[in-house]
Structure formats: C-alpha cells, structure tokens
Amino acid sequence: MITYLGANNIISPLGFTTAQNLEALAQGEVAVKKQQFHFSKSVFCCSKIEDATLNNYFSAISNITTYTHLEKMCILSIQDVVQQSVIDLKNKENLLIISTTKGNIDVLEGSYKNMDVNRAYLPVFAKMVGNYFGCAITPLVISNACISGLLAIIAGKRFIENGNYKNIIVCGADIVSEFTLSGFKSFNALSDEPSKPFDKNRVGINLGEAASSILLSSDEISAIKISAGNSANDANHISGPSRNGDGLFNAVTKTLEDSKTETIDFISAHGTATEFNDEMESVAFSRAQLNHVPLNSLKGYYGHTLGAAGVLESVIAINSLASNTLIKSMGFELQGTTHELNVIKKTEQKTINSCLKTASGFGGCNAAAIFEKV
Amino acid sequence: MIMEATIVSYCKIKNNTIWVNGEKINIDNNSVDFTAFLVNLYRQMNLNYPKFFKMDNLCKLGILAAEMVIQNNSKSENFEKDKVAIFLSNNSSSIETDRNHIKTIENKNDYFPSPAVFVYTLPNIIIGEIAIKHKFTGENAFFVSETFDPNLIHTYASIALQSSHTTDAVCGWVNVDGNEYEAFMYYIEKTNFNKVGHGLNMPHTAEMINELYN
Image 1 (cartoon, each protein chain N blue to C red):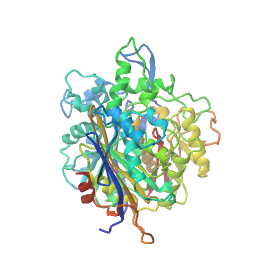
Image 2 (image 1 turned 120 degrees about the vertical axis):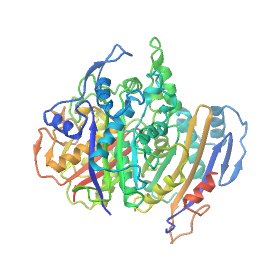
Image 3 (image 1 turned 180 degrees about the horizontal axis):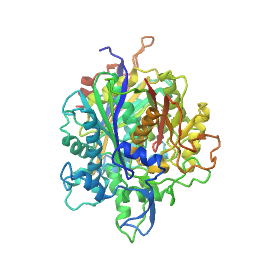
Image 4 (image 1 turned 135 degrees about the vertical axis):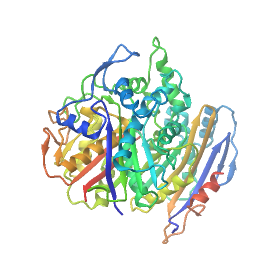
C-alpha cells in the first residue's frame, strides 16, 4: 500500500496558506525578528504570529474568545486542509493527529483571564480542536520533543498502511511563550540574531511559532508519497546530541533501507543552528555518505517551531519536490561543520524526485522519512 | 490476525503499591510521600544509578517501572539493543515539571529558570532516560491520551514489530499529576519459532494488555 501526501497548509508570520509561505520564501523573507515581550527587558529574536492577525482570520469562521492562540492556529490550519480536500473528520475512517511539545502552555502560565486551566492538558486541547471539526475519532496526540511533527507523519503512514484509517490529517503546532523562551535562554541556546544553520558563525536557535497541516491518504490524491520513515534513539544524553550522530545515522540508514530509493536528491535537515546539533548532523550525513546531497534547514526563516517543525518542513519539502525547486538555506555563508555539507546557497530550479527529511530532539530522539514522486 | 509477539513481563505502580508479573511486591519503609516512595523503591532495588536523583518524579517512576519489566523478563544479554523500541503514553505530559519551571519564572525579582528543570518539561525524556540506562537505541514514540489506550499502543507496537528493525519493545503508561501517579509497563518480544519464549509468554493482544492493566 502507498501513502500519498496531499492538501497542506502553513500558518506562520509569513502567511496563512502554503502558497503565501512559499511566495515569501521565494522573496527571501524571514519570519524571525527581534521583539520584546511584557515579561522581560531582554530582546528576543523569534517568530510570533500577532494576535490581531490571527483574530482577523479566525473571526471569519468562529468566536475568537472561545479558543486559545494555539487552538485558533490549529483550527485555521486544519480547516484549510479540510476545505481543499473535502475530507470529513466526522467519518470514522479519518483521523486527526496533533503533534505538539507544549500545547496550551500559555494557559498554565496564566496568560488568559477566563480560560479553563484544564486546557493546558494536551488531550483537552486536542479535543477542543477536534470538536470544532466534529471528529468521530478522538484526535491522537504525539508529543516527542522536536521530532513530534515528523514522527506524527511517520505514525500516520503506518496507520494508513496497516488499514486502520483511510485518511489522516497531521497538524503540528506550538507557540512561542515565556515558558519556552526562558527555558531555552537558561540553556544559553538562543541566538540574539536570526539564526545561521550549519554556518561557521552559528550561535544558537531562534524560537518560532507555527501550525502546519498535511493530508495523508491511501487514495491517490497527489503525485508524492512517503516511502519510508523510522525513528531511533541516541541513548547518550537527554539534552545533547550524540557526538557521533548514532541516532540520526540509524534512523536515516533504516529509512534508506526500507525505501529502496536509489538516490536522494535533497535533504530537508533539522539544522537548529546550535553548535552541537548541526555538527552532529554533519557527522551523521557523512557516515551515511549523503554529505554531497543538496541540503537546507528552514530554521533561518521560521526559527525552531518545535512540535510544528517536522510538519512545516515536510510541507515545504513536498512543495519543493512538486515545483522542482531547491530552496536556499537561509543564514548560511561559511562551511562550519567538521564534515562539509552541500548547503543550498541560492534558490534554484532543478529536477528533483526524492527528499530525505530528518529531525532530532531532546531525549536523544531522531526521525527520518523519505518523500518521493510516485 | 497472526500473533506476532508475546508479553514477557509487566508491572504496575499505583497508590504506593507495586505488582510485578501479577505479584504484589512489599516495600520497606513505605511512605505516603510520592518522592520518598520512589527513593525507597530505588534503594530497595539496589539500582546504584546516581543519575536517578537528577530526574523529575515522572522519569523516576518511568525508570523504576522499566527496570522491573527488564529485570523480570528472563532475557539473556544476547539481543540487539538497537532493535528495542520504547512506546509510552500518558495523560498529563510533563505537567508537574511544567509547573515547577513556571515557579522559577513567576516572580520577576527572583527569576531563575534552570536548565536542569526545563529539560524535563517534555514527556519523551522518560524514553530518553530508559534508552540511556539500557542502551536501547530503537524506535521511539510518546503519545498523550486521556486514559491509557491499549488499542493504540498495541496497534503501534504491532506495526513496528512487523519490521525487521524492531524485535522487542518496552510499552506502557507513566503519568504524574500532583499527588496522583500511575505506571503500567510491559515488555514485548517478537515471537521467534526457533527459541523458547522468555518470561510469561502471554499473547500480545489489546485484550490481554487491557486485562493486565485493570
């Protein structure tokens, strides 16, 4: 059986549809910018969707005070996919999977005046989103650090090919909050400037906010399939990647073996722009003999959108395949990893048929998937 | 459906009570305080794993439950640890540690977020801790659901076991929220017709998982 990848959406500061986001990337626009928050005198370089913009879009479909910031992002994103595909989530053959790391963490922080604190529980949050669409099946939540989004797509493929569901919408979403900004800052992991994945002068990540959704189906809804996907753990450290890239290498190797793909035309990497992550990826890709393959990280545009990243970056990768476009890896100028990588310096048209998508995260987790033209 | 795997061990930890493979385990110095209970259990198990003390309670509970199913599954050391998967789930994600992280940033005059706390604000860190302790480098997934969902975990593990990349899996539920906590873990092994099964050798079905859980 084949799992096809179809209708998709991205809600980000660069736009509320995939097309708007692709157009912004083509123009070299970035979502990350320096901004100040009420809770700190520090300036944070991150990407945040303005309440006014979100409410403007959301008020066209429902009441803006009923839902949290994140729920509105998710509902708008899923709604776009539902509308494009006419998939009915009220049907038991269809499932919604939500990937997120922190869900409505702003509810737990007390950012809302009249919001039930139980909304901070991921199953309650998922139900709020699911109920909007009248989901017959309770939405499934995957919360697996920074591989959540890619893992959700891999899980979706498995459920479809196992015959559990006919169509699955995967929605990945996370917000930028005081919670995450203060936490990553305490790790000294944040960059004060737009991040520079894989560059010699990279100093850390930018956090980003986004929701992104994609339809997976057993029906031939598109000309692109997910041919394989696996995860693997480093078993090395809970907050740092393995120096020899073991987990990522294993996830990639298993996935290449399963897909039987002969060549990988480009890699959509994780590339957070921290010193250790990007170095680890260079080691893993080199061990897999993939360091010559054109590669990008989209974190220079969007920042690290945590639970959304794997979905958002897969959506861009699939559109890159469809339009035969290699998208520039924003922020990269100088080789900055032990093993040289073929980082894409300029957006260009090129016939591409296959993409390796990877992700790595806290807890030593790694995931890899291959998207291919059918 | 073909029976693709067997459950070789399981354990439950709830209300200061522990069952391993259906037998109740007595705890020395049983305490009503959850943290003290975890430490007592750790000492009684003679774990000698100092990293345990750095963990939040969710990971402590997960590490102890995993230890029980791994120590009590009669497996030899001769198996491929890169083929052992870990699939866990809970209701409350990392909410206890989320609250603790928020406490460190609530007061602007006493603002000290700590990386040692923040790193535990992800539920899959339990998977990472189990993976590190046992060098299990296979598949991972952390699901969050309202209640333990035997069908979900059974389905996901069954699919993984159909692949040559996975032979064994540690599965279950580990939840901590305030004073409420619960762990249910089990170890499954791909049925291998060339060797005698280990441990309990119970069929890996959603019904069996549900029966063991209840």
